[in-house]
Figure 1 (cartoon, rainbow, N blue to C red):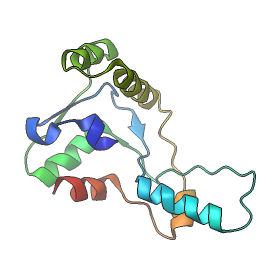
Figure 2: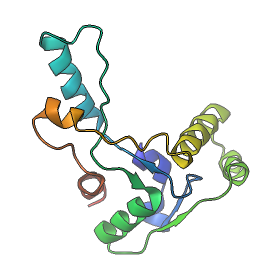
Figure 3: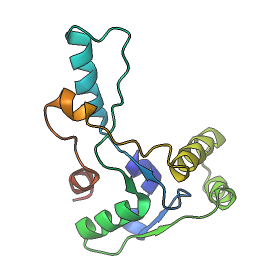
Length: 141
């Protein structure tokens, strides 16, 4: 989701997303799939739920700093109000359903609802999950 929320920041040098300084614990889908395969293919997981999160949480300011380092140019993070963000998205022709999803995510991040850090995913993977820094290097290098 980082590339979706960051938009064309690699070209423009700006991430515009209304998450303020809230943080999220980002995880690769591939790593979630690995953990799910472990649960489905081993015994003892019936009626259990697991917090499949990363071991660190980062803000969009952190993401902008990592992108700056990888791209070799400044990437700035701007956090408009939700209303301003919705207006920007509407002007860009983004469908309302996506605008709603983006603003719900940003609001949850602002309220620290996505900042859960836990070792459970690491246990299923047998290693630490991919960091945001590693992901950004992979995607933007």
